[in-house]
Amino acid sequence: MQFQVFDLRPETPAPPVEVEATSPEDAARKVLGVDVFRSGRARDSIARVYWQTAGSKNMVRLYSKPVER
Image (cartoon, rainbow, N blue to C red):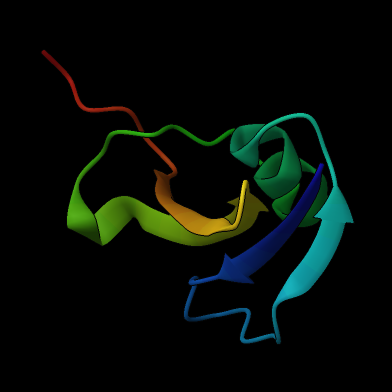
């Protein structure tokens, strides 16, 4: 599946990167080189990942640290 990864880290401004991956997390790991999580605090947000399925565009925000429960 094809994903578009937007790096949100302020120290690494870059255009979005398209990558072939199995999941949004896999795509972000390939592009950013760090572990990512679907839940986290806004200040830990490091990526937005977009993909398209069955004619609809999807997006998930990914974070550098999981939310502690």
